[in-house]
Amino acid sequence: MQTVNRRTFIKGSAAGALVTMPIARERALAQEAKHLPAGYAMVTSLRLPLAGIGATDLEPIISGHTANWSDVGCALSVPIVPMAIDGIVPAGLTPTETATDYDDLITKLDMQPGGFAVVPLDQIDFRVNTLKVNGIDPLLASGTDDAPVARIGAVGDIIPGRNVAAHIRAFGDYSVPLQRTKHVLSSFDFTFANFECFISETLEFPELVDANALDFVTRPDFVPTMVDAGIGAVSMANNHAVYSWAGWGLPAFEDTYGFLTNGGVPVFGAGNSLEEARKPFVTEVHGLSVALLGVDGITGNETWPYALGVVADAGSQATDSHGGTNPLNLPNVVADIEKLVAQYDIVIPFFHMSEQYYWTPQDWAVETGRQCIDAGATCVVSSHPHTIQGWESYHGKPIFYGIGNFIYDQMFSVDTRQGYVLELTFRGREVVNFRIHAHEIEDFTQPRFMGQGELAAFMDRFWLSSDMLTKQFG
Image 1 (cartoon, rainbow, N blue to C red):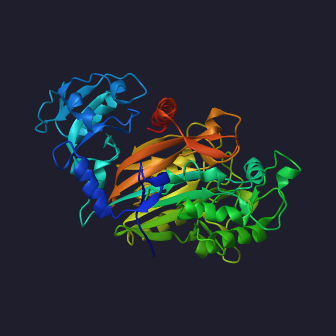
Image 2 (spheres, rainbow, N blue to C red):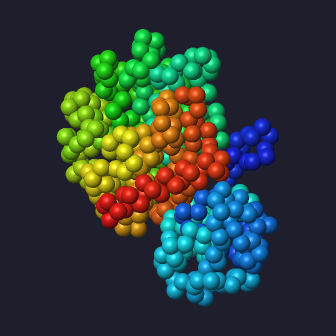
C-alpha cells in the first residue's frame, strides 16, 4: 500500500512553491481563519457558482447588510436568502425560511439557489456547497481520529498525442500541457487520471502524415511531468490502451504500461493478465485506505457489446492468457467492488464509458454506475464522452458521469474544449463535499482554470446535463 503525504499549494509563497504541510497544521489554519462558532460552516445551494468568501464578508451576509451574492464575488446576480435549521440560528441572523432539519434544509436550498445557512460541520455532506473563508476550507478541520479528512482529485482524459504532441515538439518542452493546472492537482492528498495515449521511443508520430490521425503517441519524457504535477496513478482502462487503427496492439500497450509504472506513475484498470487488470490501485491517505478500480466500457464492454459507441470486438480486454484492459463485465465488476468494500475505507470505480459528445449518459452507463453504488462503492467517476455529462445522487452517494477532456486537442466545440477536475472531500468513509475546478483547453494543448464568469456559464451546462439526467432516469 502506498502512503501519501499531504502537499498544499500555498497562495503567496515564493514563486507559488509547493510546500509540505501536515494535516494538523491545516486544521490549525482553519481554526485561525474561522469567523463562525467553532464547529460550524456557512453552506449554500450547490447551484450557486461561488467557492468562497472573504472573512470580512461573513458578518454583512449574516446581518443582511449584503443583499446579493454578486457583492462578494459571485459572477451572477443572485439575491441572498438567509435560512436556518430550527434551533440553529447564529447571532445576528434573521432567517426568512426555517428548516425542520438538515434534510429539509437541502430541499429548501435546492429550490432557492441564493439560500444560505450556518450548519454544524458534522452534519454537512456533499449535497451542499460549503463556502471557504479566506481560502480556507472549514471541512479540513472537521475530521476525527476515527473519521479523518482527505481530499482526492479526479482528472479526465489525458491524451498528449496528435496536435498536443506537435505543440510539445514546437515548444521543446513536455511540461507545457500541465503547467497551468499542476498547482491544483498537487494540492490534493491524492490525484488520479485517465491516460489514453501510447508511449514509445520508436513509433513514428502519426500526425506527421495525417493531422487528423486517430492514433496517439507521446515520448517517455511526458511521464515525469505527470509525477511533477502530483498525478499519483492513472487508469489505462480505455479505448486507446490497446486498440489502434495502425494495429500496434499489445506490444505498444506493454511498452506504455512499462514506461508509466517504471516512471513512477502506477497503472490500474489494465495489466498483463485479466487478474492483474482487475486489481485495484491501493493507497493510504491520512489513515484512510483507498482502492481505485479502472474499468473499460468501450473496447472492453462485455455486458453491453452492441451499445452505441462501443468497440467491443477490438480485442483490447485482458484475458487469462494475455494483457489488456479490465473489461466491463458487470457481474465481475460488482463482485470486485463487494470484495473491496470489505477491505478498504474508500472504493472508487473509475469507468471509461458512454457515448461521445452526448450531454447525458446512456441507460447502460447509468445502470452500471448505480449497480456499483448498490455494491457499496463510495462514489463513481467516469470519462470518455469528451464532454461533461452531469452528476446524480443515488442512494446517498454521488455518481459523476463524463468529467470531460483534460489534455486533448479537440478544439472544434465548446463542449470538447472544456472539462473539470473533480475535487472530492472525504470524512472517513463518506463523501462530504465535491468541488468543480472547470478548465478550458487552449491552443490544442494546455488546460487553464476558468475565471468566475466562465465558471458560471460552465456550471449552467453542468446543471442542465444533471437535470436532463434526473428527468430521464429519475
